[in-house]
Structures are given as C-alpha cells and as structure tokens.
Image 1 (cartoon, rainbow, N blue to C red):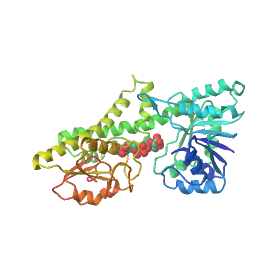
Image 2 (image 1 turned 30 degrees about the vertical axis):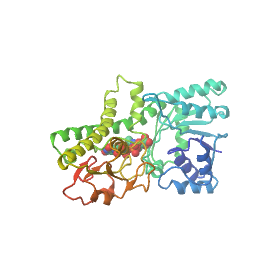
Image 3 (image 1 turned 120 degrees about the horizontal axis):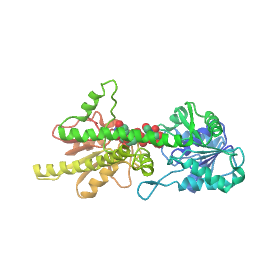
Length: 401
Ligand code: SAJ
C-alpha cells in the first residue's frame, strides 16, 4: 500500500476516501472491528454529505481497504482523537499508541504525518519516541504535522479546496509532506515548522471561540439593558472595520469548545482571554436554561397553570443533524431533568428520531406551546408564524433576520 491512514473517524475516513479517489492505494486502520467491517462493505459509520458515495467507490475500485492493524507503506498518517484526561488536560495517548503500532515497520525515507489536533510540542515528542525505539533510523524519516481545518457538513469539498499548513520537523520533511498533499489538495500549501503548525490549528479555533464569546457577552449585557442584540450587532457591523459574530445558546461541537483548553492547559498564566472565552461560552448555556426556568415560573404565577414549552433545535449548530457536544441538547436535558412531568415539544427538524427525546414536528410545536424557545437557528424556523399571545425566548436570532 502507498498510504496507511490510522484512525477512520470524522476526518480520517473522508481523507482516506479522497486520497483513494486519486487512484492512490490506501490501507485504513481502526481499532474498532465493526468500523473496519462496515468500510470494507463500502458503507460508512458516520454522517457526512457525499462521504457514502466516495467510500463506496473507493472500496469498489479496490483503492481503499480497512483493517485493525497497519501494513508496510511509504506514507503514514495519524488521524486519531486527542481527548481530555482529568480536567481539561489533553491526552495524546491515542497518537502515541498509533505511532507505536507502526514504529516496527518504518523504514528509511518514509513520511510520517500527524493530523490529530495536538498540544504544542507533540510532533517533537513523537519524533523522540520513534527514534528512541529505532535509533538506526535517526534523521532518516520525514516527520510533519499537518492539521485539518474542514467544516463538518462540508468536509468532502473543504478537504480538497482549503489551504493547508504543513509543518515539518525539518525543511526536508516539510517539503516531502507538501509534495504528498499536493497529490490531492487544490488549496495552497503553506510551509512552516511543526510547532507553529500545531499552534496554528489551536489558534484558529480559539480565535473563533473568543469572537463568539464576545457576541455572547454582548447578548447578556443587551438582555439587561433592554436592547435587541441582533439589531445592535447588525448596526455595529456596518462599521467598515467591525465584524462581530452571532450570539447563541453556547458553543458546541468537538473542536471550538475543546481546542482552546489545549493552549490554556500548557500556558495557564498567559491564556487569560482564551480561558475567559471558554467560561463565557459555557455560562451562556447555563444562562439560557435559567431563562427558560424563570419564564416558566412567571407564566405559572400569572395564569395559575403550567405552560407547555417548545424547545426548538437540538443540533450543535444550524442546519446539521449532529447532536454531539451540543449546547441546545444540554439545555433541553437540563430543563427536562428539573421538570419531568411538564408538557414539552422537543424539535429537531434534521433528525427523525432520538433515543432519549420524543421529537415533535416544528410547526405543530410552535402552534401548540405556550412558551417557544429557539435554541438553534435552523432555516426551518425562519418563516414560522407565531401567534401574538405566545411567550418567545429567542436565544439564537431565529426571528431577527
Ligand atoms: N457559533 C455561534 N455563533 C457564531 C458562529 C458559531 O454561536 O457566530 C457556534 C455554533 O452554533 C456551534 C459552535 O459555535 O455551536 C461551533 O460552530 P462552527 O461552525 O464555528 O465550527 P465547527 O465546530 O463546526 O468547525 C470548526 C471550524 N473552525 C473554524 O471555523 C475556525 C472548522 O474549520 C474546523 O476544521 C473544525 O472546527 C475543527 O475540526 O477543528
């Protein structure tokens, strides 16, 4: 095989399929036997537009095969998760384990790439690990860090067209890694060193987190001041050098709410704004849940009966069906947990059923409930007709565009 791809998840599998679609032989590795079997049948275990066709074709043409162990290749890519251990400490043990798995088969001239989001200095650590196990290969491998930056929901397009940052442990490694990506990436390939590339990935997501935190902080101030946040932000953004993002019910997903901790854990004294942004964005979800609680009590006091409540949206962002690490789901769980005999309409137009929540149709929910809570700015909610006697809590600007 030409390429061994270790980790066949949300990034590894699409990347493997893309490389294979360029008639390059890819051997995919995953520790999960069910995932391996699914892929070898030409099927997929994750949801991502266009991925099903790409994998089916790659497997049918014989360019993509999956297994639980690696084989000898020329290029090795590590695309495994880097979760947390304890409280917000990044855990690179999957990257280390994946590396250990290929160390015995590495040979002179091979290219070894880490794509997993990693704390600063990880590539250097992994280099030392490899050379301590195989001292005879010292300086004979090409090792680089090349983060992915694709947007869930648009992965197959962005994998090809986004620019990439390529950071080798030396200039030759950077060059060889860039030549590899040039075979399937159309975006520009920017050369740097490994440390800068590692930090670049973390900074991109931290930057977005900080900017969203600013919008969320404004929304709290506006709520107290009696000002419409969306009108305010829209007006401020008319200034030629101001671009404020949108407030919401918190920040979710597996990257933006996670990566800033990778910087803050290693540089706690310096990461003041980065840490504060995490706090603001986490607090925003808690605040939204409290607001619903308050509205419910106010209704009970006024009408002497419990209101029915529609919770509009569960996904972690608009117009996708991904509920993982979703603040809207967290808020819904918190509200239902505090009130298990209330009448609720839980709405998520992008999925048909859920194992915990009984889902309702969004039009029916908006016409039946006494209190309507917009948690996610899905396109379906934009032109909803809502009777004037309803109480509306719009946390994501659904009614303001
Ligand atoms: N959000 C807001 N207000 C906004 C924009 C977003 O509240 O104005 C919220 C969303 O609702 C969501 C969260 O932020 O809960 C994150 O959504 P997102 O669309 O900003 O980002 P992700 O997590 O889907 O993907 C990000 C992207 N990074 C950047 O845009 C800098 C993507 O390019 C990365 O590849 C991905 O993280 C990753 O894998 O790291």
